Length: 417
Image (cartoon, rainbow, N blue to C red; front, side):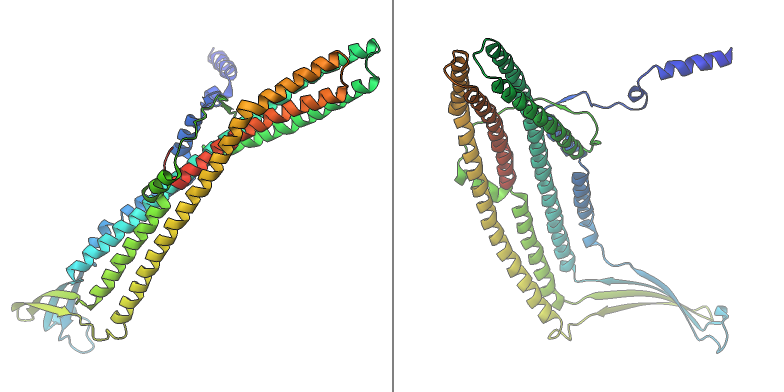
């Protein structure tokens, strides 16, 4: 009886899909652009690594205020020569010592650690912007592949319709057999193009899955209705915004702060360091005593060390300030280039939207009507069909170019637009 129940349970387990038994995936979820970006920001391993580096830098801040480890010791004096019996000492001393830098140096070191942590934070923010840009770009590439397949499939249906019309015209003697052959060749080309585009589709899905920290082969469906914002931004406003939003520029400014703290520390090298030592002593006869020692360093060799260190740190500070100014100019130029590219791609997209598409559709209607009425040849009809197909493909390419350029502009500015 137990064997029968066990066998029945085994059969029931096998009747369930394996993916429901072992794991639950969101492979059947329809991903919007916002969901893709959110998933990438949550799960991307590169971003997680950058975040941990930032957290590591934050944990170094409090360490800067900590002095060096204190020292404990014991000293035996007056032991008989050749004897290792410590109980025969003349004087035993317990020692506790602590070395301290000049107090202001601790605060300067903490300030430098804060600035270094700010740099790590800026790099993390830049990595977020990079992941957002890559996620949007990969999503749009997949969107373009899907639209290309859709257009090719529609054109295959259209060519099959043309082939039927041509066959009817051939049967009535109104069209030569070569028109049928041309239609069949065009159909074969379109089918080959469809196979190629479907292969590219899988590559695009894999790239997007990897950005979301998923296996490349996991099924992925995306929403093909996307929002296309109007281009209404002003270049000078974006350049001004980038001066306080771009994380790489913020990191460069924090590097100036690091070098300022380093320069300040170098100047404080002329200040003394201290060492305190407390001693408890006991003689062989049992007499007890205590002592206190205080030592300080003096910058005796300042002409060789401290002076040159100050000059070194000052040069590093001036270099960091120059790098910051250079970075400001580069960011401003990067925003300008991204702005120009985005504006140009937007204008091209609007031309396709408002003019080119309608003209290509009208040209195909006229060519089909003329071919049916024997007013034009089949090649003219094929040319009109190709023109419409290429125009529709170029229209979606213009949309993708505009949105990808907009993503690049957002990264250059350092903020969502």
